Image 1 (cartoon, one colour):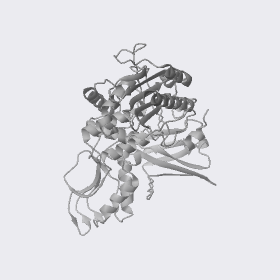
Image 2 (image 1 turned 135 degrees about the horizontal axis):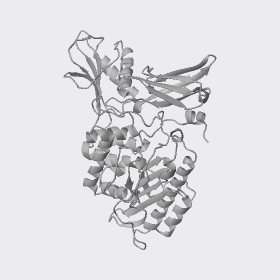
Image 3 (image 1 turned 135 degrees about the vertical axis):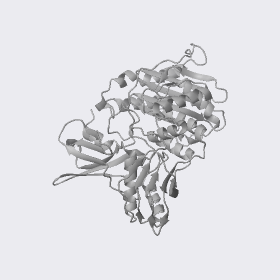
Image 4 (image 1 turned 45 degrees about the vertical axis):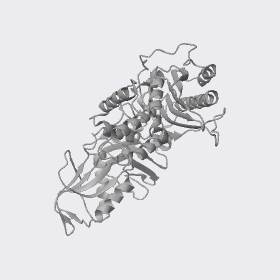
Length: 484
């Protein structure tokens, strides 16, 4: 079993994302008949059997030029895609928003600036940028300070209407995991706040901050205190405009830090911006949140990277908030399930598949897609930007070690939930037509049985995931040698 201290100290924002799901449903397509081109090969069957994953393993590999199925097993069984769903969000967002799309965070004024005095309200305006972080917000503050404003006669306002406020991506997650934050039109640091602690002679010193590389502003809208208890590790209490946490003192050890999710991202971002402005001599009070944006003049603004660059980072680091924000922006829907529904409708119309998506990140365990449907979508997207945005995986030898300088490239998107593992992408040889594949593994009964307290790092979960990834690497290596 994992200790609470190990979980607290060792698991940061990049941990594998657990979740909860129902048993997989089957798509209406019939399974491949034995002896057909889609039947599983003996070598593939042995690789799957040796993995001993339980549940269901489904995969398919196709000729990228013709779409012919070369090897398959359970390819029509719909399973949770986990973060492989982000590849579908990528092609959806690029189609709906365009490759030149950028998010812009602005500071506006409702009146003129005269002799350093703003005669009106100052408004921090968000468009839903999921990549905004403290250092870039600090640069925005500096750009505003360069306008010479030293006083605001009106109010300090914050507008977060770029995308709807979402309290959390998936309700079937522990409260304290940093990969399941809220979303809004104003997001900062992937809507996580840094909790740091250090034990001294008089107990623990604890702080919350919105640290970047160049700026480390303290945060007061999120608070934490240590209490004497065995469980739970963290307990959360939501305030009207604050996040309050307690932590089991015995789990803290001498010192450490970890990111906690923010449930009031509009308040968080507005507070940090006010703190950064204070360093430039402009004192702003607490922001008033507004639901409609009045007319005004733009004083300063900060743009995100272009959409393809943002999506490349999302696919590489599997950032859930980026997937959800981009998906919500693309759909214009008022909630995640409605937005997921719009994406699945688009996939049906554009690529002729019938998946079910409840979000855009794959964190929600109720999403379903078969290996065949995923591979078909990848096949159709091959001529677009997707292959160039995916992370290179590399071929591996029989011992699981990556083969250096191998001429055949593998670019793919991974996905991990508790007892769920997915991989989909392309096998690209230097002088051949290549392969398109998707592999899904899920033991949903085992996953559904997990109590909430065990979902961040369940017993046996890491070993199961290692076996699933070894199986994936072995299948890919076999396909590359057999079909190319």
